[in-house]
Length: 284
Image 1 (cartoon, rainbow, N blue to C red):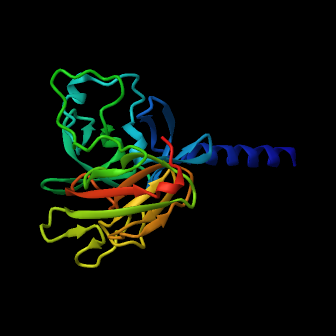
Image 2 (cartoon, rainbow, N blue to C red; image 1 turned 30 degrees about the vertical axis):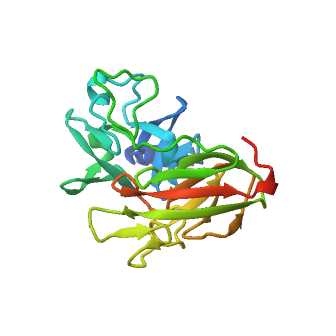
């Protein structure tokens, strides 16, 4: 009986050793703040990346991530960093070749499928073919050339409000105004944003001129391209063409943006007149 038990145990162990462990797509996420988060890349959704850290899922907002590094590097070569252009992501392949475009999806099992929109069309890569993905210039990196021009916006507004430009290719624009929950703010917006390479795919502050909705935008039930607002890190609300006073959903800093899944390929801007209720006592 002891012999049979040992034989069965030996067989089970040999089977276990013969079955390879499930491969993981491990990456280090370098945040704009300089923080590094290492874990298994699970998915990319409308709000950002899902990363498994120590067995538990963690959400990282796309706007907070500067670099996705699949090699565990401690620094990034100037030869790569200096290829980053405004409004584009830079994908560095294992061969050293670089691809400029917009990362828009992560899918599949292992290795992960990395989908990138380029000027010549959509391209799919495997995660094991990629060294790094630059979403932004990493903090503290040097530049051998002058940085590419960034979308200009008006300076942040005083507490009493004023006019501010909201570029279509920028996820959020800081108004500089701090609001309190329930306080009224009046918005008056004009302008037009082109939402893709299709010249007819445009939107005014009220949203898409064709009536379409964004498949992965910040607010899926609001028309694509519509003017939206955010208070603090989470509380979002639709604005559109509204000219009436709107109660704020939370306490915090007020941001304005365009309701689109990928903003990097957008063109145009909205001009928004923002006027907090004079009696609301807004503070900076």
